Image (spheres, rainbow, N blue to C red):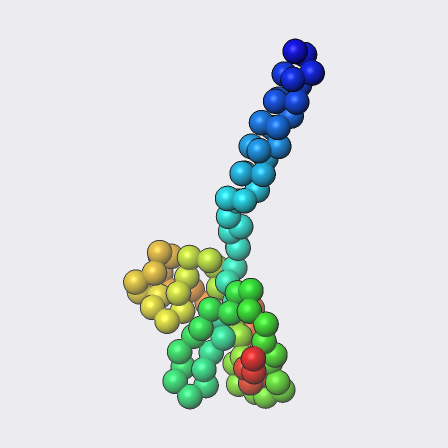
Length: 93
């Protein structure tokens, strides 16, 4: 009986740990945005593979996670925010 209780306890612990890991959400402190030089519209590149080819134009900019550079007046972040990091180049996927 003790052996069964121990096995059930370990199974419950593993099931709980697995469930916690499966539902964990990773919050990024900053999000990386790519700027289309023709339209000036930003696209969220966080977690996307891309290359910035050599150029003098803005390729990517990083902003806090609650900032939408396309609509800073309507996003969750108060006020207008300047990018924390700018990378020059032409965006290529």
